[in-house]
Length: 195
Image (cartoon, rainbow, N blue to C red):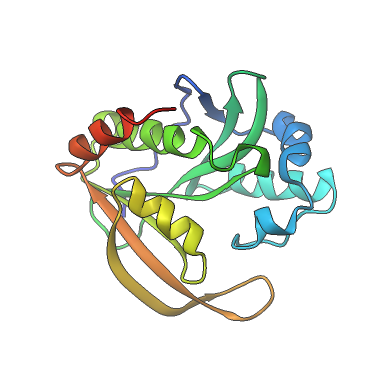
């Protein structure tokens, strides 16, 4: 497990700002991805059909001591376009997980995901002092696996029937990690890419 879950923080990038998730973000978040089955396809909850359903999910994360959720704010507009979390990693010393992440379709294939991961991974290694960042995804979510590998995630294997999906089927979960001594080279590569 992590030494302790971090306090919520504001992390600034050129494209996005990550700030502690709160219910005030819900209207923007619902506009960004509420009810969108494709956005919510691989997440641990069905697509919220109302702002109230999305607010309940957000409050669940905010109140959960094993999650530190951040709203992803597009700096150009000042609007929330998704959320991402730090999660506790029971059984792993000095590690933290980045997950429960979603973005509205309007920012897919943009610099948003890369910059979010850079901000969170930098903070994890430089400020929180972890030695390992974990990421995981549904084995069927090839888009997410490609994105994780792109930022430097190394495959650690697959846990079969790790949990049930919202539709009741079993999910096999692909695990990845980035170690503190691996990150500088990946960070340099990512920050040299055109935006």
